[in-house]
Length: 135
Image (cartoon, rainbow, N blue to C red; front, side, top):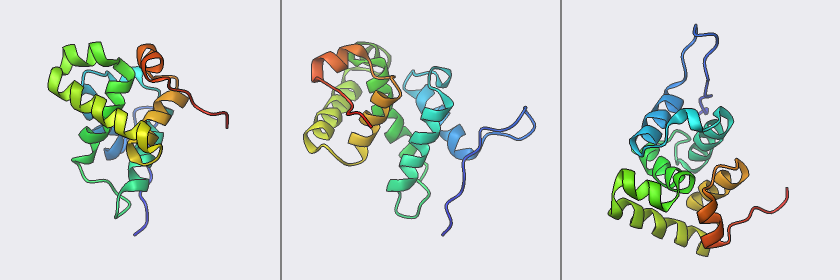
């Protein structure tokens, strides 16, 4: 199956692709406004989801799952907890901890993307000793 391309739209004439709209909605659901995330980072995140999707196209439920950890990394533990509650924050922190322990995989790639995009919250960098190697 050929992989469908994502589109930002053009001069308001051609709309954003469905995958980017779904990601924007998922980010908003976790209190991370999509305007705070550069379009390139969103495109990279959607492509990452496609890389890990068995059919090349992520199912709809993958967008909130992805946005959950991405928003936690970008907002930091305190703001994420205020916006989403203590249980989703604790679960996101467990995902972050497991990703760092594994050093690879989907969640680790999300964390790495937030680091490279310079979107990761400074307190998480300090708390977990996060750093991205030079490319």
